[in-house]
Amino acid sequence: MQEKLIAVLIITNGPGELSTWVKPVVDSLNKLNYSSKKDDKLNFSLNLILVPCPNATGREYKVAKSWAKFKTVTKANTFWKLLINPYQYANWPKKGIVLFLGGDQFWSVLLAMRLGYINITYAEWISRWPRWNNIIAAMNIKVKKRIPQKYRYKCKVIGDLMADITNNKEISLNLKEKEFIALLPGSKKAKLSVGVPYFLEMADHIHNKNKNINFIIPIAPTTSTNEYLFFQSNKNPIAKNYSSKIKKIKPIKNSIFDYVIETSNNTKIFLIKKHPCYEVLKKCDLAITTVGANTAELGALTLPMIVVLPTQHLNVMNSWDGIFGIIGKISCINKLFTFVVKNLYLKRKKFFAWPNIKAKKLIIPERIGNISPKEIANEALFLMKNKKYLKEQKAYLSKERGETGAVEKLALIIFNSIKRIS
Image 1 (cartoon, one colour):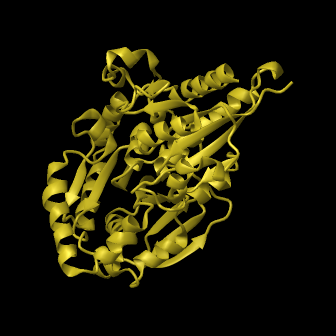
Image 2 (cartoon, rainbow, N blue to C red):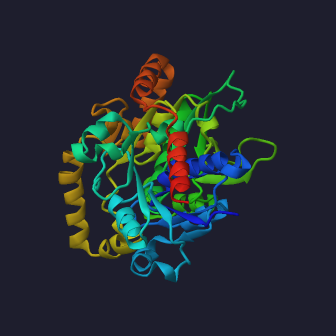
C-alpha cells in the first residue's frame, strides 16, 4: 500500500537562488528517490513558493513552470494570500515540509507554522529563527557556532550549495588561438538598461586593442535577445551616452552558442541560452560582471572576474520599473535618492561581490564609481596580458570556496525527513 502523500514546499525568491540552489537540490532529491529500492521509494510532491524579492526579475514563475518539476508553483505577489488562506491554492496534505532556499527565513517559519509542517532551513550565513526550525542545514561551522547552544542539536553542517554548481562536462571551445572573456551585464531591466550599452562599448574597446579575444554572454532565462536590442537603442535614455550599437543579432547553427551579436564596430559577442552554462564559463579566462548573485556563481567556478558598478547613471531612475520609476520622474526625489545611494550606501558598504563578502577581504577587484567602459577595458586587457594575476585570483577563489557535497547532503536530509513523517 502506497504511503500518504507528503508535501515539500520550497521557499525561494530570486533568479540566482532558483537556478543554483533550488534546481540542483530538487534534481538530487528526485535522483535519490528514483534510485531507491521499490519498497523505499517515497510518495511526495514538490511545490515551489516564490516570495517577494527586490532582486527578482518577475519571470521566475515562468522559468520554474518550464522545468516541469513542481506540482504547484505560486507567484511572489500571491504569497500573503497563500499565508492567510493556503488551501485556496492547493489541497495541501496533512503532513509536509517547508524548505527554505532563499528569501527571508521568517516566511518559511510562518508558512510551516500555518500548515503544521516541519521546517528545514538552509543557513548560508546565519540561522535567524532556530527556535522554530526543526532542522538547520548550515553552510559551515561558523554558522553553527552562532546558533544559541540549546538549539545547536538541530544543526547539521552540510557545506556550500554554491560549491556544487561546477560541471565536469568537457566541451571544445577551440582555445588554441582564441582567448575568452565572459560578459555578464545583468538580468533585470534596471541593470540591463546600463549594462547593455556599457558592456557593448567596453567590448568594442577590448576588441580594438586585441582581436584575439572572443566574448561570451550567457543569456539569463529571464532575458531575451529583444531586450538587448531594446536597451542598446535610443529608446533607452542611457544608451545615448554610448556610441557602440548592435548592428545585428543572428542565430548560429551546429554550435554550442545560439546567437552572435555583431556591433557597429564589428566586434562579435557570442550568446548562449543554455542555463546554467557552467561548462562554458569554466573555459573562459576572465569574467566582467555586474554586482549580484552571479558573483557567487563565478566564485564557485573559480573564474577570475572584474566586478563593475558604474554609478554615473543612478539618477536615470525614470527608466526603471515600478515605484522607483514613478518617483524617479519627480526631480527632487530623484536627486535625493541619488545623493543617498552615492554618499551613504555606496561609501558605507565595504564589499559588493559575494567572494569578497564571504572572505571579508578584497579577493576580486570591485570597480565602483564613475568609471568608463574604456577604463574597465584597459584593466581587462592588462589582466589578459599578465595571466599571473588571473592565476592568483583563481587560487584565492579556490581557497575561499565552501565544502562540496552540500546538495546531496541536503537532499538526503529532506529524504530522511519525508521518510520519518510518512
